Image 1 (tube, rainbow, N blue to C red):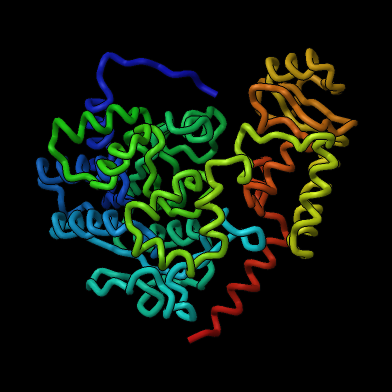
Image 2 (image 1 turned 180 degrees about the horizontal axis):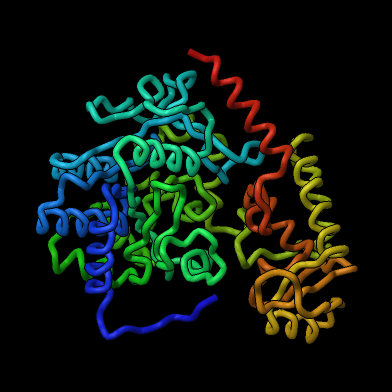
Length: 433
């Protein structure tokens, strides 16, 4: 992992240099616009640059519509599409498989699903630039994951219009994972040695021109440039929300559950429709900021160990859901016992000081400075700063209480069984007219 390097120019100037490179290097520039503050600033900056340099013919934008979103967000998105009516525009309303942490029985939900049309949160938009299930110009199957659908769309776009840079408004100060994704020294798909450019195929490259901005930089830019922004942020601010916690993305993600209750206050009509649209929404709204949803300050019931509490939690789940979790947990226990994972020196020290027995194997074949560590006795709890990186029965309990069906919290990707289940869903919906 490379460290931060501070330059003699500010982030705005650095981004202008990146935009110049992008517009000089690529035939097309396609902005992934979400309706949020970061992608909004990025879209405005890209349009400013294109207009100033007579390159608007290269620029395009797209928006992935999740159906259940704030009316204020949708108004802002439509305003931006209307404002930039002299560039290529795409509004995607697709029945994608989208992660959901509101339900104990299902880890995903499907917006714009035709069979649920009577309970859609909003009517299907009718603008000429809308792409839905009836007019998709690339090979698409319902229940495709939302990330895969976006990648398929951008690859179709580049294959149709030419070499394309897809501009994505990710900032690394939002999370360590985002910082690691961009700053890692081990990426094999970096484009021409630019760490903020990631090659997806021979004609499609993801670009992150504002990766080094802070949230304060975003709002400073909005103020100085008088850019349009989503007025939902004003409501959030008036409600006392910290600027670092404001989100406008898909409402059912685990990252957004603690703020889900704001829908009930800000847009009660939208909230009423969401209640009947996705399983578990009301429970998640009520308990999203409490220990019931498995946040950091979760407390163990008196007289129980975390292993005992895990067994209890598993008994509360539907049969298939319980079996899915048990399979994941068994895999985790066997992995840390037989193969082991990698931990940094500080975490290893914290575990040793806590008296937790570990077998430190030293250097690994992984391209990392961390050491391989085995846990032959799976710990009940792990009182370390980087709690998520260390196996424990407490971490398993939190995974269940977060309705994290793929165990992303524990570092898992989808299992083969889950992928098979998803493929069956795709086959099922493929035959629905």
